[in-house]
Length: 553
Image (cartoon, rainbow, N blue to C red; front, side, top):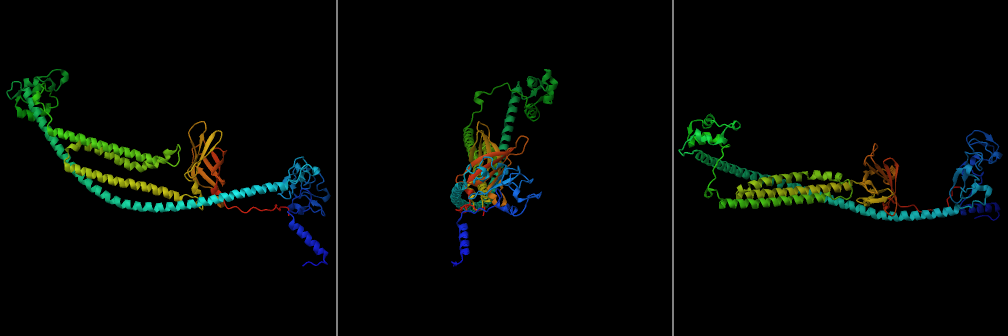
């Protein structure tokens, strides 16, 4: 309780109350001096230049004459070229300007104090500036708040996606384990049936070769007998030198144009030979050069038997069936390659993305090539196989198909596991919000180029007037400072510049309600900077203050 008999106490209370209720308090000091430097300007003492170069009477401060080399004696005039004028700007924020701008006819301070010679020139706009800034801050705070709400939704989706990936990964790993167990059984069965198939094929092939050899021997013997009969012109059952000489194609030296008796005798190895000696000693040496001059009678020409016609028909049908199977395999392979050619991003660098796929399918391609070769060989030999061998071949082929189908499924699951693991290893921020950017691309067009940002993948540049896409960098990592790590993305190892470094991109992330590229710049050769806005970068804003700043208390 305040004593009424104490007028001094009452005055003190009134003074303190006026300070509290005021928006700001301006401390009296020489013109152009900041609050922090007021201690150096004591009117009761001589003034010492702030650089310590000299000491002058305080009356020479702000006398429009430069006494100090650092200009500190003229903070409120334009006398010194290197001086500094402090705008108090009560109600807004203080500002330091070169003292050369004092009384230059331009309003630099919002309180107009820099133009003190003509006070009507510059109205005080500090409160209006603060009002505008406050509105802008409130707008920005509202936008950040709305963006933060969106971020929370994206983070929730990102966390759910992570859980979904983890569950899918566990499921695929279990399936992979079962496939590996099945693989061993299928391979064991395939190897067992293939061994039987090989044994049956070898037996059939051996029988075929024996029959062919026998048939060839019989045909050769028959041809030899026919040759003997043809050359035995007098039909006395004996071949003599004169009869051999009738066949000029038997001349061992056709180039000299003369077939002599000595040469003929050398062929017969005697003056005359009968059929048995001819077949044993002569025919093997002339088999390749003898040419018959006779044509077999029509009634003696070999006519295809019903058995041969049946074999031919079976062979043609089997050949057609096998060729259809081979064509079907090739079509399935093409479809499989087309499916694996699909990518999340459409770009001209898809060859790099397909290298791994080519490696994955190499085993399948080798298998299909081998199958094609075996099929071709089987088609040729198929009509020699009996029904039991054909059944074994079909059973082995079915075992190979089941085993290969298991291998294909295993490879597909392994690819899914690799993709899921890659997604789980990706850094989507502490709350998984940045997961919303994956598998998306954003464009930004200038007069010359169209730029593209595909977060977690690449950045690129394409000329507007036509031309190929240039890779400006592949995803590297987050590169922001330690306390603000998720403010920058680094994309590196892009297309190399001519006689320069590989292109790279720094993507600077800022809060925004929309996900879009704000600007693109190339501050140094082959080093690009993208400004990108996204709600994923919005944080919970601090409440905006309602009062004026109190910098000059």
